[in-house]
Image 1 (cartoon, rainbow, N blue to C red):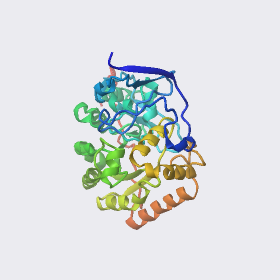
Image 2: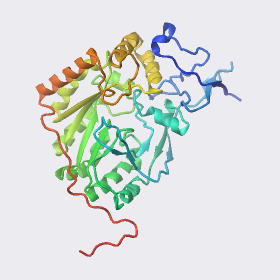
Image 3: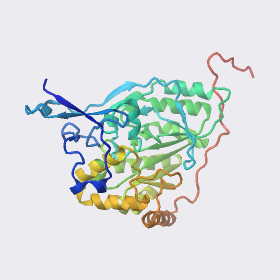
Amino acid sequence: MNQNAAALQMPTAPAPSDIAGLSSPFPAIEVAIDRQRRRGRGAQSNDSGRYEKEARVAFDDGWQSLDDLPPFKTTVATDTARKVITRNESPDIGFDRSINPYRGCEHGCVYCFARPTHAYLGLSPGLDFESKLFVKPDAPALLEKELSAAEYEPKMIAIGTNTDPYQPIERERKVMRGILEVLEKTGHPVGIVTKSALVVRDIDILARMAKRNLVKVALSVTSLDPKLARAMEPRASTPPKRLEALRLLSEAGVPTTVMVAPVIPALNDSEIERILDAAAHAGVKEASYVLLRLPLEVRDLFREWLMANYPDRYRHVFTLIREMRDGRDYDSQWGTRMKGTGPMAWMIGRRFEVACAKLGLNKKRSKLTLDHFEKPAGAGQQLSLF
C-alpha cells in the first residue's frame, strides 16, 4: 500500500499557554495536512472528533506516499431527517427555533462555532466539516408539514445560525429558496444570517416578504482586509460583495443588519468602526457584534490556524481572549458567552456602541409580524369551502 496510518489513543489537547515553545503538544502525532491537499480550505488539520476512541493519522512510510494523496474535494450526502425545525431553550438568543438546510459548511471559516457538530456524525470538525457536506433536499416539504400541524404556534424562524444556508452548494441545490417559498406562502416570519452574496438571488421573494414585515437579513462582515478575510473565510463571499449585497437588499426594502462577527482581539477588532461605517453607507440600519467563541475542537483548530498565518500574534491573541473569558479560552455561560467580560470586553462594547450612535445605527429595530400566518393544508386535510 502507498498509504500508512497510525491508530493512537485520542489525547486531550492542553491549553495553548501550556504548550512549550508553541510547538505541537504531541510531536508524535502530526495532524497538519499538506497545504496543497487543503488548498482553499480554512482548517489546517483533520483530527478525529471527540467521540472517537482512536485518532487515525496518515504518516509517510519513507516512500513519499503522502505525496500521492488527493486534495480534499467537496462531497455532498443526503440528510434524511424527518423534521427540519430545531428547537432551543437558550435564554441569551432571540429565537427559539431554527432551520439548517445543510450540515457542514464549505465556506470554511476557521473560527466557526458549529464545527464541533460534525463530531456527532463520526467526522472531523476540521477539514471534514468544510468538505463532507449533508443536504436536506426535503426541507421545504418537511417544513410545510410541520407548519400545518394543529399544535404548531408561529414564531420567527432563524436560518443560518449554525451553517450558512447560502453556501456554494445552494446555487445548485436551491433548498433555501424552496424554504423561502413555503414561508412566503404561509406568511411566516424569518430571520436570515449569511456570509454569502448569493442571498441576492432570492431578492424577489425577500422584497415581497419585507413588504409584509416577514423577513430581515443579517450579513456578517468580519474584516475589510482581503488577505485576512481570505485566510479566515476562504470560500465565503469577499467583503466588498457582502457590502454590495447589503446595499441591494436595503434598496429593495429588506431590513438589513451588519454583524461584526466574530470580533477577534488583536486581529480584527481594530476594524469595528470601519466595518460599521461601510455598512451604514450601504444603507444598513442595524448592527450587532459577537466576540470570538472557541468551544470544544474549535479552540485547537483556531490555534493551528493562528500559528500558521499569524504566529507573531499568537500569544497576544490568546492572552486577550482569556482576559475576556475569565481566564479560560472559552466560557459558555449564558449571558456572557457572546460579549465576554472584563475591561477589554467592555472597551470593545463601548467602541461598538459609540460608532453605532455616530452612524445612526440601531435607532430603531425592525420587528416581524405573525399577523399573516396561515397554516398550510396538511396531507389528507380537507380544505375549507369558505
